[in-house]
Image (cartoon, rainbow, N blue to C red; front, side, top):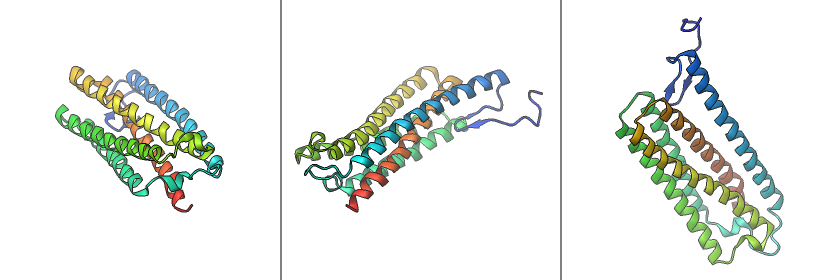
Length: 212
């Protein structure tokens, strides 16, 4: 029976669904599940880009390889920035879970945005340096695959930062109601997904580049 002690409590970061009526819980669960489906489709896109990179990495056509063009120290700073942003967004979820004030949620959200901006600034700076050294996508299949893979992730991070700004505006207008919490959950799933993709990029592209 609804509300019985044997009924499992459904939990999400930033939102306890067990205290909601069954019909609302089902609606919220379907909403979250639908976003998981979107993330899986996005994961397929990145899997294809990784596959293309793996098959093209040796096709340098006499141009520098991606591994010889980038600076691992810069990639390390970018990794630190993005992984730190995952922690700060986790603090957003904890604040929502404990019904903290909008001030605390906004503070951690702002820090997450700044870390994302630091990551993007480093990535754009790396790309500009590579272009300055005439290491451009049209010079080889390997470089094309590198720029498409890393650039696609950068575009996703840019979209996530726009989403953070929109969530800040939505929270300012509507407060932290259930609709806003659900949107925060979606944003959190998206942001943590981008962190996982970057860890894969750092391992497969940058660390592998050190090995030649």
